Image 1: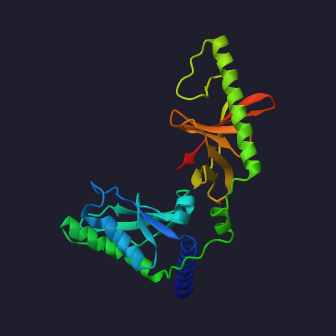
Image 2: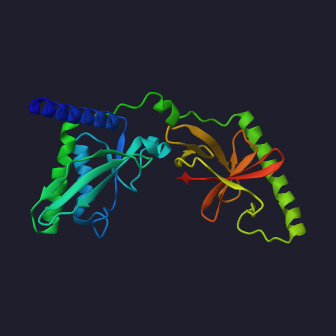
Image 3: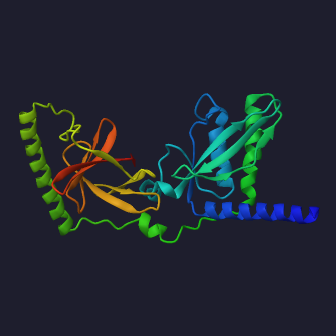
Length: 280
């Protein structure tokens, strides 16, 4: 009975390990936090650089947060996992563990707890972090992109004559909207500032993509907004106005006000305003 119980435990651990490895193989990069929460300053004791070195040693492509990112990572932030080192409580030992999270803040992998009995901070942290990262040595990581991820994250975006016509049409609509709002200001004696779009109590605001973030990926003359799939939801193009964009194939604009992003469009004769959660 005891033997059967131990066999079941080892089988579960093996399956969990294999699943974690499979998930890790779907990510091309790992971005190491530039400052760990248990430290007072960025890269204190060179622990962040050490983490990057150890990840590269075990076959990953590691970067420090804020570094110049490769082009494909700039287009699709979900190609990378975020690496953070956390300190566990301990009376006579320094205990550290490594957590990898994806672009939706889901924990994909947690290392074993690395330990050290050294009393000097630098030595104890260095020894514990090396011990924690030793978990990565047996993972056998090899990048294998998800089916269809490449085509979704690297679209071939071109501005066609049809697109140009759509942009010109939207510019005219924005001009008309501005003129309508000027008339509205005269009638209601409201003062509009900062942007050409006024957010008043009469406009119902609803949130788009409440379940996750929309990631802005640079394209020619603007950005495209993708979810974590990644699926392209909007393509928006620059205008002469700061933080105001035209939306492709829609009579709509996306703009920023009070550090929040909105998409405004007309539907069934009424103005609709939706809050967007955009991460650049």
